[in-house]
Amino acid sequence: MGRASVINWAPPATTPYAPPDVSTPTDISTSHRCADTSIPPPQASSSSSPHTPVIVSPPPAQAIIGGIVARSPATTALPLSLSPPSVEEGESHTENTSKNIKRKKVRMQKVNTPGFIDIESSHKRAIVWYFRKNVDDVASYHAFLNSIESELIAKLCECVRINPIKYNLKLEATYVIPNLPNSAQNLAFKTSARELYGHSNVERLVDRDFAALQAEEDFYAGKYSGFSLSCIDGLLLGVYEYTPMWGSSYLPLTESILNRKAVVNPQNIDLQCFKKLSITVHRGFRL
Image: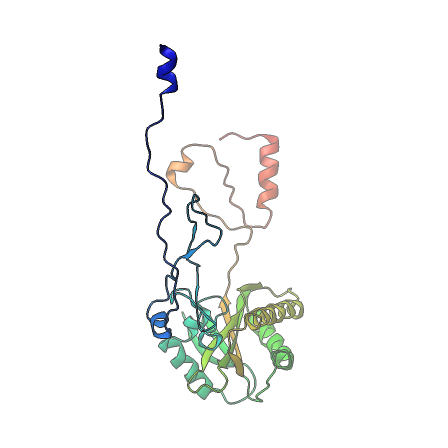
């Protein structure tokens, strides 16, 4: 009796699987491609069977129009000829402000003779700027720096003879895009400020500065910005008064620190303050 119910049982009827209706892409006219190329039509897989879901390939990342890859305007790179020159990503922009352009024009018109000419000073001549113009129109950085090396050494020795100084160099030039009118850009390669004393080896320091300037220029030339050297304008020398803190300098302590009786602050008139302090600590002292 139970056997007949098992034999007569059958699974419930189900509707047969029907694959989705995927239309075959047709030829698209050239005008339609140009109007909407961001998302190409989906393509059906050729290996689909009546009982296998159709795999639709995702749209490619880039659309090709007439053999040319179409990119988003936000990611399309500018031509090299339109890229602004940059040494330190902002250095050229600083040199091309209206204020700096006027100042450079004034010194280029003011200096017409060789040698480092005093062109500007501030703070009662605590800061003095000298300019060595490229009056001979030397076209090579290496040749220009070699031609003025002895003049720079003589000027630095003259300045440091009075008191210690700090100085830095600024090599100025003009770059242009070939065959493009009104594309001139001011560019400058700088060195950091360096201390100079009467006993310093000026020749060796100048050689290091020149090597640093040429290394900066080589780094910029390797960027292939599209700009070419038009002319070397000259070398700007900045000289600053420098007063280092020597021994025998005495700074009185504030009342709050003095009352703590935890600091030794000897006052002497020679250069042996550290020696006297060490002897005092070694022998013992009363605060």
